[in-house]
Length: 123
Image 1: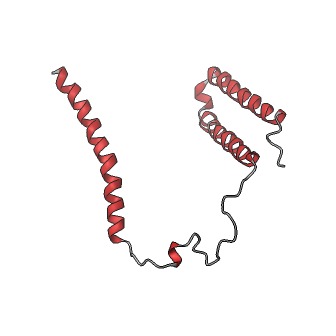
Image 2 (image 1 turned 45 degrees about the horizontal axis):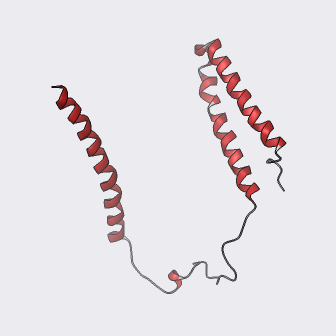
Image 3 (image 1 turned 45 degrees about the vertical axis):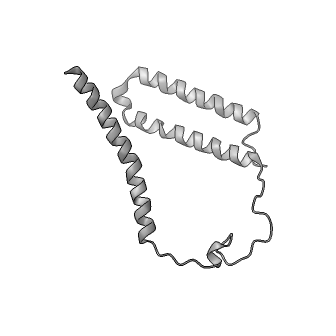
């Protein structure tokens, strides 16, 4: 009896694995069949905007832009974690308050560290 349950668990994983592979493959194949196919020279150029490229498209950007954007995303996502806590604050009690204070202090330490490293300076 126990072996049968064990094999059923693997069967479920196998079914989901097959579905995870087959559904995107079928969707891509159907999209290829149903889409219009009208190739032209303009569609094979680098840009379809009608303007010929006049220099190399690989322009180097300063890494600070990426770091600034990542810092924004990190702190933006972390503040989203505050919302469920604020909604359920009355039910959670003092333990959740202490946990959230530790969380906010860690965020502040990260912000101070980024500030000291001058990551937040916009060139």
